[in-house]
Amino acid sequence: MRICFVSRRYFPAISGMSVYARNLLQALVEAGHQVTMISQYRDDAYGKSVYGGGPPPPVPDVRVVGLPQIGEAEGGDFERDIDVLVRTIAAEHARTPFDLLHAQYGYPTGWAVLLASKMLGLPNLVSIQGGDGHWVGSCCETHRLAMERVLDHTGAVLIGCRSFADEVTGRLGTDPARFTIVPGAVETGRFRPDGVETGNVPVLLYHGRVDRRKGVFDMIDALQRLDGEGVRFRLVLSGIGPDLDEATRRVGEAGLAGLTTLRGYVEYDRAPEAYAGADIFVSPTYAEGFSNTILEAMASGLATVSCRVVGVVDCLRHGETGLLVEAGDVDALTDALRRVILDRELCRRLAARALEECRRLYSWPVVAGQIMRTYAEVVARPVDVDFETALPLGPCRFRDAPHLL
Image 1 (cartoon, rainbow, N blue to C red):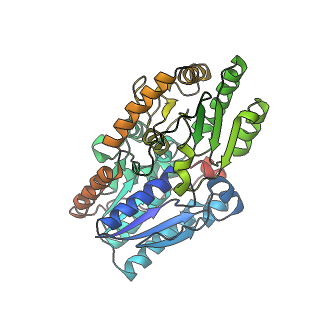
Image 2: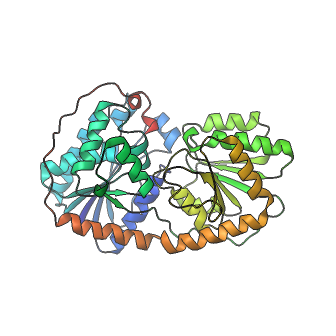
Image 3: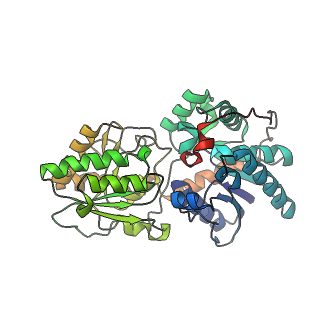
């Protein structure tokens, strides 16, 4: 099968989307499919500082086409970039015809794929990511209508977990039967316990997008309290994002600079090193589609402290495979971190149970097989072209702050 995979951002941008794309592309090639990836990317100075942006690198045995998000960078003009995406898909199809279009993210890439599918008569499906359900669709009429049309008319909607699907249904009224649950996955051969005890001072790791919506400020506040109590720990803060400078400032103001290592941007090939030598993974996030970093922590043999939110409750159970608190509850987060730091036996027990479950349920061969079975179902069905292509244009908070998408 010839597949066109359309990504909102690929490497060098470090995100769950990049990891998902990399592993899926590898699995498709290994299964004998011919794949073209069309990937948007930020190439402006601000975009690079937030995402680690730049043109996508070569991918073995995959044709890679990079498209700079010029419209997004110049005032949030997503429509300009969508037009370029549609034209590029059509040009690549004319070059060597596709059998299937697969969009990663419902907007803007999913909407572009739906438009291209209608124009070219090609089967399509969309993988819904965290931003789609939690922000896009509730921000303005333009994005609400675009997301509704994608969800209602694409050949299949892949989504990471039931709690996320329920939230999207609640926000946009989507028929629950439209969703195919495909959980996140991790390369269990690359992310694995290193077997080294860190010693008497537990090492805490925050790894991923440095963003207040991921709870990074809550974590700093909680650790400031524990430090004041005399609880001993070290923190590794790994990643970049829109709030990196503010997080760095707060670490200093909290008196934690001497206890904290700031790793900054970490290439995915070196991501296992970020987990190696840590004991506890801290992810006090406010919402997820399905957290790749939590899966990586589970596979790496770390105990996890996170939040009782969409996309986390599907892969962690409180007291069994991790500790969960309510998002934004710094008191509860402080208590949970204190427990897992001081009770090393609890830390080991949570980590061991999570590792076993991760290897059994969330390995890439299992998940990629499910995605490819969905491909076969989609290409056997008629293409739905019964939708309006025009959208009303109006103000939206993402036009002023597109990095929040």
